[in-house]
Image 1: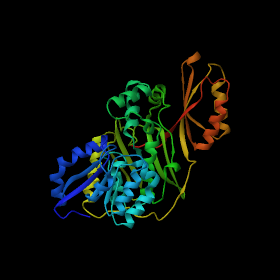
Image 2: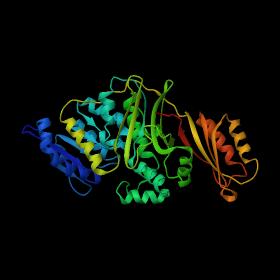
Image 3: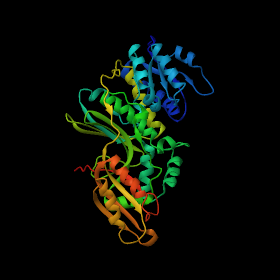
Image 4: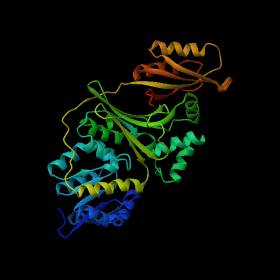
Length: 410
């Protein structure tokens, strides 16, 4: 349904941080959008927890923008809107990562658009690039920093020596982190975004529960201190890549060498690198955390939906999800200061086929630490070595490990 009076009416579901920013942004850009599309957008109604009725807003809208978050009733509203012939725009990455196939199928069945650029990486236009500009390329890997909150926290920890808790408090003070930041810091937010990107890049249904993820809440300031000694930068990186005939999708803290395209991305910024034999590599970056940034991406989707058509094609393949992949690792051990410790650790690692690339020994007595980087190995083999090392009687604390991306650029 498109209005016949030259207007384009938008129903807004949710007026929190992003919804409020979108509601303020729309009238400021209405004249410019009218010049581009020939239609002048306006809000037809806003539904919040305490006001507005979905059915009434739907009846007088040409398009529905969903910024309320959560699974239900957001899923119910989007399905109803598309079945009623309305285009929809959402920034709900959890909904898309769990019910994306149902939503895309409904959009195709009712010949409407489902747009979701704001669900991944803020203003970085990675969704549009994958759907349109690189639609003809065979993608080999998509990886990137897709959570601005965690990137800000890691940047502050590295820059100032703050603890995780101190850097999180600063992120909350500046509005980069929610009052409840659990989905950001435990990696679930980034995992949901990587499920969406993997689906688009590899034409394979990927659901959130298939994505292995870890967060940053266990990172210590001395991990970052030793990283500097080893010439590394720490980032929370999401990866989706072909491995043989399968697909691996994962999110982990990972050390990068300084020349890597993602290593210099700091603060609340996001960056995504797309790799393909046809294009070699494309890296996109921009602000990733904050209401105005996400609202800007949502507005871009609204404008695109006003200029039809664009749709998400059905998946035509189903790559097997691979869980056990090869990685290098940083290993941090707090040990007793006594002879033979390094030799015993090296022996345990060797039993599992893990070879050591570099070692740094720090401190004496109760401050004694071994920090090493091991060569790439299957994660299952490294974990088996970790389990054995954890049982050694000279360890003063559980071993800590962080992945290392061995690729060097430049």
